[in-house]
Length: 154
Image (cartoon, rainbow, N blue to C red):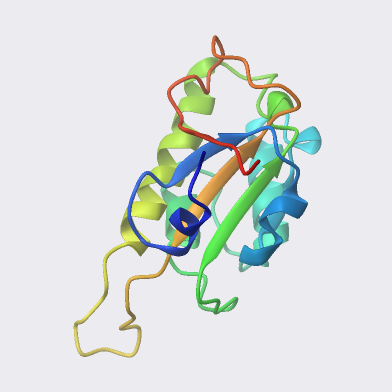
Protein backbone atom coordinates (compact mmCIF):
# COMPACT_ATOMS: atom_id res chain seq x y z
CA UNK A 1 0.00 0.00 0.00
CA UNK A 2 1.14 3.52 -0.84
CA UNK A 3 2.02 5.76 2.07
CA UNK A 4 -0.05 8.93 1.57
CA UNK A 5 2.55 10.94 3.50
CA UNK A 6 4.73 10.61 0.39
CA UNK A 7 2.74 13.48 -1.12
CA UNK A 8 3.50 15.64 1.91
CA UNK A 9 7.28 15.42 1.59
CA UNK A 10 9.79 16.71 -0.93
CA UNK A 11 11.44 13.40 -1.76
CA UNK A 12 11.12 11.75 -5.16
CA UNK A 13 9.68 10.19 -7.04
CA UNK A 14 7.54 13.18 -7.94
CA UNK A 15 5.32 11.64 -10.61
CA UNK A 16 2.80 8.85 -9.97
CA UNK A 17 -0.11 7.06 -11.60
CA UNK A 18 -3.31 5.88 -9.95
CA UNK A 19 -6.75 4.44 -10.61
CA UNK A 20 -8.13 6.40 -7.64
CA UNK A 21 -10.35 9.42 -8.18
CA UNK A 22 -9.25 12.87 -7.05
CA UNK A 23 -11.45 12.70 -3.93
CA UNK A 24 -8.88 10.35 -2.37
CA UNK A 25 -6.34 13.16 -2.58
CA UNK A 26 -8.42 16.08 -1.33
CA UNK A 27 -6.17 16.32 1.73
CA UNK A 28 -3.54 17.77 -0.63
CA UNK A 29 -5.81 20.39 -2.21
CA UNK A 30 -4.92 19.10 -5.69
CA UNK A 31 -5.03 21.21 -8.81
CA UNK A 32 -7.32 19.22 -11.12
CA UNK A 33 -6.39 19.07 -14.80
CA UNK A 34 -8.74 17.53 -17.35
CA UNK A 35 -6.99 14.90 -19.46
CA UNK A 36 -9.95 14.73 -21.84
CA UNK A 37 -9.19 18.23 -23.13
CA UNK A 38 -5.41 17.66 -23.42
CA UNK A 39 -5.13 15.64 -26.64
CA UNK A 40 -2.52 17.86 -28.33
CA UNK A 41 0.48 19.66 -26.92
CA UNK A 42 -1.24 23.04 -27.36
CA UNK A 43 -4.20 21.64 -25.40
CA UNK A 44 -1.80 20.61 -22.62
CA UNK A 45 -0.31 24.08 -22.32
CA UNK A 46 -3.75 25.71 -22.44
CA UNK A 47 -5.19 23.49 -19.69
CA UNK A 48 -2.18 23.68 -17.39
CA UNK A 49 -1.76 27.43 -17.79
CA UNK A 50 -5.48 28.04 -17.28
CA UNK A 51 -5.66 25.94 -14.10
CA UNK A 52 -2.43 27.41 -12.73
CA UNK A 53 -3.47 30.97 -13.62
CA UNK A 54 -0.16 31.36 -15.43
CA UNK A 55 0.88 34.79 -16.69
CA UNK A 56 -0.14 35.67 -20.26
CA UNK A 57 3.48 35.65 -21.39
CA UNK A 58 3.91 31.92 -20.62
CA UNK A 59 5.52 30.25 -23.62
CA UNK A 60 4.39 27.04 -25.24
CA UNK A 61 7.44 24.82 -24.92
CA UNK A 62 8.74 22.56 -22.16
CA UNK A 63 11.35 25.06 -20.94
CA UNK A 64 8.64 27.70 -20.48
CA UNK A 65 6.35 25.17 -18.81
CA UNK A 66 9.12 24.20 -16.39
CA UNK A 67 9.70 27.87 -15.59
CA UNK A 68 6.01 28.34 -14.78
CA UNK A 69 5.85 25.12 -12.75
CA UNK A 70 8.86 26.08 -10.65
CA UNK A 71 7.63 29.61 -9.93
CA UNK A 72 3.93 29.53 -8.94
CA UNK A 73 4.39 32.49 -6.58
CA UNK A 74 0.90 33.68 -7.53
CA UNK A 75 -0.62 30.48 -6.07
CA UNK A 76 1.51 30.35 -2.89
CA UNK A 77 0.64 26.95 -1.41
CA UNK A 78 2.53 24.89 1.16
CA UNK A 79 2.49 21.95 -1.26
CA UNK A 80 1.51 21.36 -4.87
CA UNK A 81 -0.24 18.31 -6.31
CA UNK A 82 -1.23 18.36 -9.96
CA UNK A 83 -3.90 15.72 -10.60
CA UNK A 84 -4.45 14.80 -14.25
CA UNK A 85 -7.87 13.15 -14.65
CA UNK A 86 -8.44 10.61 -17.44
CA UNK A 87 -4.77 10.49 -18.34
CA UNK A 88 -5.33 7.84 -21.00
CA UNK A 89 -6.48 10.75 -23.22
CA UNK A 90 -3.49 13.02 -22.67
CA UNK A 91 -1.55 13.71 -25.87
CA UNK A 92 -3.24 10.89 -27.80
CA UNK A 93 -2.90 12.96 -30.99
CA UNK A 94 0.86 13.39 -30.56
CA UNK A 95 3.96 11.23 -30.88
CA UNK A 96 5.12 9.27 -27.83
CA UNK A 97 8.13 11.55 -27.37
CA UNK A 98 5.82 14.48 -26.63
CA UNK A 99 4.29 12.59 -23.69
CA UNK A 100 7.76 11.56 -22.53
CA UNK A 101 8.71 15.26 -22.51
CA UNK A 102 5.66 16.16 -20.42
CA UNK A 103 6.40 13.46 -17.84
CA UNK A 104 10.07 14.47 -17.72
CA UNK A 105 9.17 18.15 -17.28
CA UNK A 106 6.83 17.29 -14.39
CA UNK A 107 9.56 15.25 -12.72
CA UNK A 108 12.10 18.06 -13.18
CA UNK A 109 9.64 20.47 -11.53
CA UNK A 110 9.25 18.16 -8.53
CA UNK A 111 13.00 17.84 -8.21
CA UNK A 112 13.43 21.62 -8.38
CA UNK A 113 10.81 22.23 -5.67
CA UNK A 114 12.55 19.63 -3.47
CA UNK A 115 15.54 21.96 -3.07
CA UNK A 116 15.34 25.04 -0.87
CA UNK A 117 16.36 28.39 -2.33
CA UNK A 118 18.68 30.26 0.07
CA UNK A 119 20.31 33.02 -1.93
CA UNK A 120 19.39 35.97 0.27
CA UNK A 121 16.88 37.20 -2.31
CA UNK A 122 13.15 37.90 -2.29
CA UNK A 123 12.30 34.52 -3.83
CA UNK A 124 14.10 32.44 -1.18
CA UNK A 125 11.91 29.56 -0.02
CA UNK A 126 12.11 26.26 1.81
CA UNK A 127 11.84 22.96 -0.05
CA UNK A 128 8.15 22.47 -0.94
CA UNK A 129 6.37 19.23 -1.89
CA UNK A 130 5.44 19.12 -5.58
CA UNK A 131 3.91 15.94 -6.99
CA UNK A 132 2.03 14.96 -10.12
CA UNK A 133 -0.57 12.22 -10.30
CA UNK A 134 -1.80 10.80 -13.60
CA UNK A 135 -5.19 9.15 -13.02
CA UNK A 136 -6.44 6.31 -15.22
CA UNK A 137 -9.68 4.37 -15.30
CA UNK A 138 -7.54 1.22 -15.42
CA UNK A 139 -3.77 1.08 -15.07
CA UNK A 140 -2.20 -0.62 -18.09
CA UNK A 141 1.33 -1.79 -17.41
CA UNK A 142 2.07 -1.75 -21.15
CA UNK A 143 1.42 1.94 -21.59
CA UNK A 144 3.52 5.06 -21.88
CA UNK A 145 3.24 5.38 -18.10
CA UNK A 146 4.49 1.88 -17.23
CA UNK A 147 7.68 3.15 -15.55
CA UNK A 148 5.83 5.53 -13.25
CA UNK A 149 5.15 4.34 -9.67
CA UNK A 150 1.55 3.51 -8.84
CA UNK A 151 -0.42 5.00 -5.96
CA UNK A 152 -3.16 2.96 -4.42
CA UNK A 153 -4.82 4.54 -1.40
CA UNK A 154 -7.08 1.56 -0.66
